[in-house]
Image (cartoon, rainbow, N blue to C red):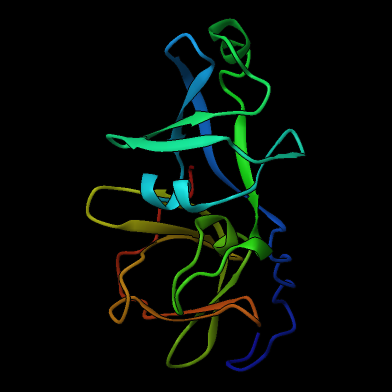
Length: 183
């Protein structure tokens, strides 16, 4: 594959229609409230969403509030602790088109499936397979044709640009980002 060739580059996956934003982890009280652990969003941001989807069915919570890093949510027609307990482990999603993020902000799920290129020489690196979250920053696990890389998601140092329309990420590569391919 030549320096500017795109022959062997796979088509990026489509932008997801739904984004998973949390999971019901427990009940709260006796009146049917549930405790939701946010995924890829803050608790405050989760409270800002109006419509959620559970098992593909839309619903609008009748109440939401932040408690620590969790969200306490009152769901329609769930009026006691036993009904709420049956919802444990259910995942909550939002429709991506219902959310406007600031320029340069992305949900992790949107990045999965994007093609990654080395910024300066436009060399194909691979496809984002997973976004790993660590205390210091996130890492993009990128599977290439020959190697797998862990690229720190640090803007202006490793991540130079994310083109949502082309579904491409441009990165600065340095030695040592390769993983042991036994994984």
